[in-house]
Image (cartoon, rainbow, N blue to C red; front, top):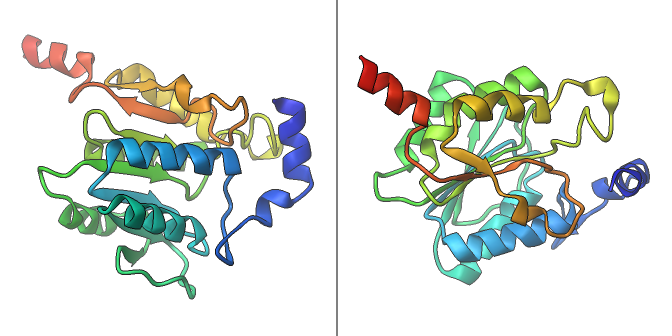
Length: 213
């Protein structure tokens, strides 16, 4: 995987991938996995941290069209012209700000199935902060997907520590999430260890802490 990944990224083709004319900075294998996840979960709300040009947001909206349900709230710190769709709401701001998190809360009801995608600033501290803030929105049986965990590990070593470091710090304290290796079945992904399946409402450590208090 490492040699292919380096060749794939160094070629620049990852930045020349389009969905209906809109640039989409994702691995095609991961896009197919997204399709499988959305069909299985049929989420009511998809929270996307990091919009960029909006190609992946539009892709998700079109998948929701095919499934017949779902809306996307996508957050980015930079304002730009992005594709419009009835299922998409764009929020402008820092994904980790209290104002943005409060706005996301308004999109989610207690009965919604919620999927979270983290794909903004890929530095370890920022990703870990996003994980701490957004994991609470994820419903049991759904996912928090941490994108581009190859950064700082397999590619762009100068950008370490990256998302993978955040994942490995988060999981020991939050065992209500597990790495779903089945989502890496094509043996090539931009998100190794990044498909985090929520299997319980709370971590065992939190439950034990509540018992002791």
